[in-house]
Length: 255
Image (cartoon, rainbow, N blue to C red; front, side, top):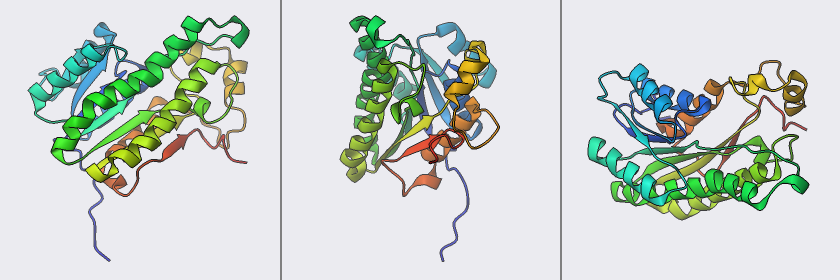
């Protein structure tokens, strides 16, 4: 049996992370950077994004913040071009930008529904489309899209707009995996369950417990749990894995 050194293989590689200023995006970007990757951080929250760059890499040699809205083709294309200009390549794209605007369907406007789908699903498409030609020219790459347990099964409190958008991310990931596999591009998704962040800590405890109904372990999910799953799928340790959705939810889906 051929021996293989257990390494993530991200040293010197270039990663782009959308939604990098949010709790989960920050955990992902920080972990990729800690593994030796050069990271382009994309977000609409400029203050938080620049603060993260300052904490990770004060000299700015291996990171770059890019203020861009994933719903804007022009802004994402420009952000990707700036990553190329600084680092000369793009090896990994992580699509983490997302929003949640829950309302019951009989109170939800079409504008609300479409705004969530536009960020969560269309934004993932826009970023993938910007990255794919680069990865094709390079002969390969990895794309990891953040889906959700809400896209797997109906969950209380997420809303039909969010659930539909994240189910779409799963379908997009599977189809892209088939389309791009011949080019050496791997496409996978991570579907987190409820994650304890500063935002979800403000949710009433009984609501958060309902979100977690059925989990098999006592610990709550944390941003780093999602980041570690992304790290695996972005790394050389997943080089025979494409088109999967990795559930990170403490066993909620066990039946």
